[in-house]
Length: 410
Image 1 (cartoon, rainbow, N blue to C red):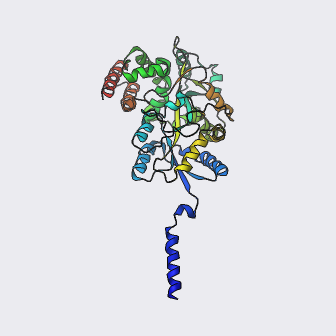
Image 2: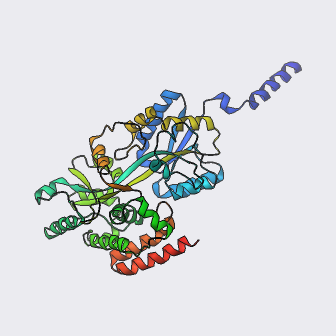
Image 3: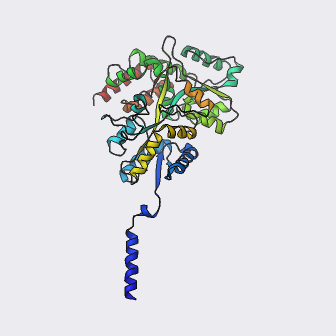
């Protein structure tokens, strides 16, 4: 009897030593700031499970809390196995701190994406730290019925855009649904949306990053001046209008236009299916080459400390393949565009039209994303001050130029 008990105890001890990974299939976790995309992305990941047998659970965080929460998780060793990587500075910092994988050698990363696509997720040492996932365009949504009522056409120049705003205002229609209640959108959607029309593409943006150009030069000053002109057409009480209020104001007929991103397009169909909308790119001033903020928005990387490195790398390789990219495109939320070189088909007609807005223009990502991210708060503060009339455009530009010097002197 004692012998039997001893054998049973030994068997139990051996079972306890068997790794959990041998007992059950791993379930990877994916972090993201896109909690509104949970249904679509989980469907995509379920499709991947059909193909690979590997389970991945989508566990997004609220957009405004994502950066801080992700870093805390990674520092504590509880971070997700895969996570959405912010482009440029924020994502690069996680790689520099050892939290994001080096994906340079993963098949497809170097072959299937061009330098422009990879640039947003390339570290100073030349290593790529995320697979490019999706880009977005900054656009002006408008109510087609209102435009038809007042016989308005999509503007070709910024001056025509202002004329449309004035016509609407004279007829008692609020031209723009943008406001200041959330700092990020007045900078990211509105100002970053118009800046490329004034400074040109990334070659000129890099001159601001090196200090060759100053934030109070004639080009940036003109961008701030035209931003100020737009604020005259914001809603009454615009200081209390949040980004989330914009779609409702348009759909309910309380405003005619809304400067936002292509990512918004899915929400129109979901929340306001009867709303008759279209969109145009923020036009350039007469005489300037048309440009657009075509932002490298989402990359996906692996946690450098994941317990499942092979499964993570296999998913990233699939993501970087033409076959995977087409499946991903089928599940991407409306308004997001694949960045892979391979030819992929966008099933949604309006998403295709939004993507086409950038095809004949100079393209660049958000102005401060690459090396001037420390200017984020100063820019927000000065844009708010301009809109509220508590500073002049020249004063704001001079202040920003001084802040630029501080950042570049570090």
